Length: 566
Image (cartoon, rainbow, N blue to C red; front, side, top):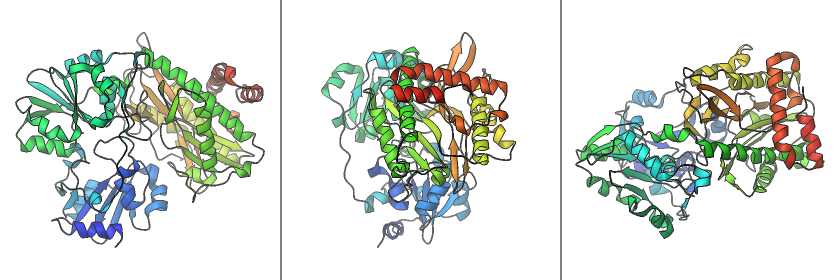
């Protein structure tokens, strides 16, 4: 009996007619470890977001626009692929008008609360058929002041004041990244983010941290003293009962299981947004200086990598996996580099059209001339988190490829040069990023930008740049600027820089953090305005000035050419 049939057999034992499986685990982190990736186990889909719906006679996989091609390749044999923006999961389930089971610890209350057809099942049905090894208990570690720039006691004081914590009011935090920011602590619980999986209860006298205790060393306990108490993660419900006489505040994105427990036990509680999301998005002076430094280091690695590619004598001996590995080696030469900030998108030729492509032994293409290579990658440094995409040309491009690259670059420039103020929303910038493509009746099927953490998650919210974003921008935020275009089975083009929101007196502006040259041979100068030409030349001079000291003789000559005026 295959695993889908095994799951259906289990479903038949409950008073339900289907089962819903999300990508995330019970900590709702951006990245899920392999042994908690229930969605991949049941569907084969390896993307970072999606839901599988298993019914008696049919299976559905819901993904967003980034993953439609990938999902069809990986999962269409056993699943019908549906794009979430075109088919709401909730509306789909409502139309079915049947009872669908779900694990309440894996869904946020705000999501589940919309649908009465969803039935909580306390046992996870995937876990009953999937036997796997336990994760190692990797130790947590504390960041020193030269990396965080603000003592955890000051942060806690700010948060307590905003939340109005008292003897009658407590607050439950279920975002691991927010807890890591609050305590200036990091962990090794996910592959691409330095996260300690945890929940926290903020009380008047102390903060209770629920996590795996084997990850907390005696020196960490000693450092925090009696104000921070570490408790086994499986004790959270029992411990909450001790605060039944207080008003417990929590975010609507807290898990359904916890809210359901609070309601069933008649707690006094109120929904209140977690203020840490906004606080941590505004990097302090130390964090900004560190971010700028780590982007110099990252720019050196990526530029050396592109030089290595373009000057390789046997291009056809390189494939996507080998290129991805080589870039990692260039980053590792810097002692402050730790690991990738997400799984690298190393996509040659037609694979570049798959927005979130992942190279495997089966799919990896060999390089050749007269083609494009899209490389989207990032690094985790204690100094900060990076994310960059460049489209690299080998040989001669077509006129269409050059036109597309130039249109994408114009949108990229328009975002950076936008005169932002306290009335600018993410949707305003998204419109700017698309306008040059839209004039040619072209577009791209993903958002233009996401916030980026400081040695935390590479995707952070706020801020965001998308068609529906109503988020404003504040000094100290870091956001990606990444318009693109994708021609199915032909090529993909994306240009991504991370940009810092700088506040000078009362005015805001964007400042590039990413320092890697654009692909000049793909730019059609006649399509550009004088201001766009000035931007490119000014950016390239800035790149050259920051990277030149790190290059050997041949690399320096390459950098001079790449950064020379157009």
